[in-house]
Every structure is written in structure tokens, then in C-alpha cells.
Image (cartoon, rainbow, N blue to C red; front, side):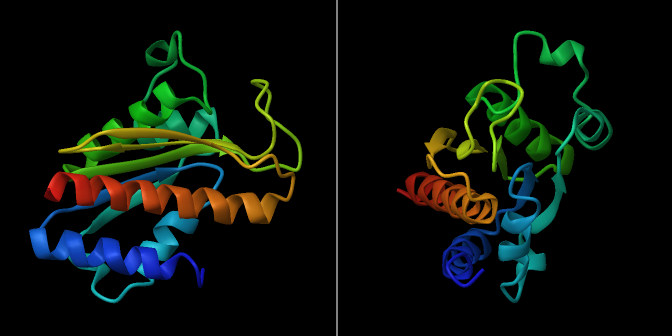
Length: 163
């Protein structure tokens, strides 16, 4: 968390100054993204909510994304990360939506992605989608790397939208 909180603090400053809001949907980070953002005092000014969407059941129940809506998509992909980001944004009526989906390890996922693979998306006034491949099998290290990349992706989007 020590490396994540300074990034979350920068995000907090921008969101509060602009009176913008954020909602998060994460998978293989297991809540680290939300925890980092909520560790910053005053997060209630911008953080509307989040969900750990780790399974198909969670995707249906928490995000309202049906199996039909998943036709042609697979988890741990950029299109799915973008769908998650847009959906969490819409469901919370937030300015921004941030999503992460990946394979933390120690092995890959059932879709053929190696451990260390994750996709991130930001949906809002500026949209950005990114993939990270760490090539590592260390689950906890990957979770931290994924959370850091998600936060940095959001920060870049916020900075881009500001200019």
C-alpha cells in the first residue's frame, strides 16, 4: 500500500478540485485499488463505490452484465475492462469509472493468459485502455503491480482531461 497511496493522493487532489466522482470495478487486485483510494482522508468527496468482480456470478449480480452482453468478449481483455469501466461509471452515476481484470497467478487463467496479465480501463471524459504483462508468477507482487498500473492509468486520464 505504501507505493499506492501517494498515487491515490494525487488522484484525490484532482477529483476534489474538480468536484468529480469515481467508481471502481476490480478483479484480480481484490480490492487494493479501492483500499488505496479510501486510505486517503476525504475520499468520501469523490469515491462513490466499488466492487470486486471476481467471478461470473459477481459480474451478473454486482454489475448487471448478462451472459448475452458478454457474447464475443472474454474476461481479462481490453474490451471487457472497458465494458466494466463504463458499467461501473453508469451504475454509480460517476464522472469516472475505473476497471481492472487479469490473472494474478501463480498460474494463468482459463482464457490462456499467463500470470501477470491484466487489462485496465478508464471511462469518463477521457477514455483509456491499457494492458500490462509482468511475466511474473508472484500473486501478491502482481496484485500490487496491477493496482499501481490502474491508479497510474487513472491519474494520466485525469491529467489528460484537465489539459
